[in-house]
Amino acid sequence: MYNRKPAEEIVLEETKVWNCTSEDCNCWVRDNFKSSEKPLCPICKSEMAPGVKELQAVENPRQNA
Ligand SMILES: [Zn+2]
Image (cartoon, rainbow, N blue to C red; front, top):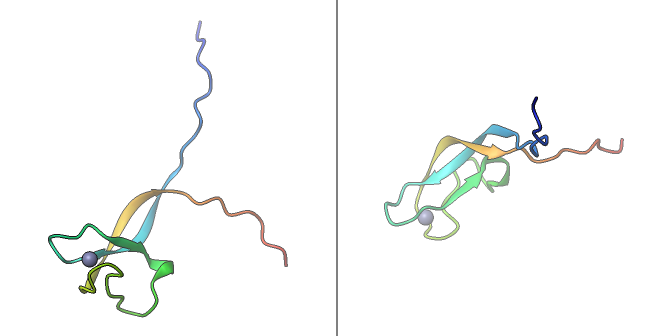
């Protein structure tokens, strides 16, 4: 017999991000938040490198047409 409550499902999604290249800075931004083609770190203004992060999927409610 199993008596497990259904765990709240956390969906992780590979999300395109930009990582700060500065060793002292752990900043990163989601690709869709970037302000230009090659974003600069909003914290330290270093260049950022494209990468991928497993992030909790953002609920995407049906958009009103
Ligand atoms: Zn930075």
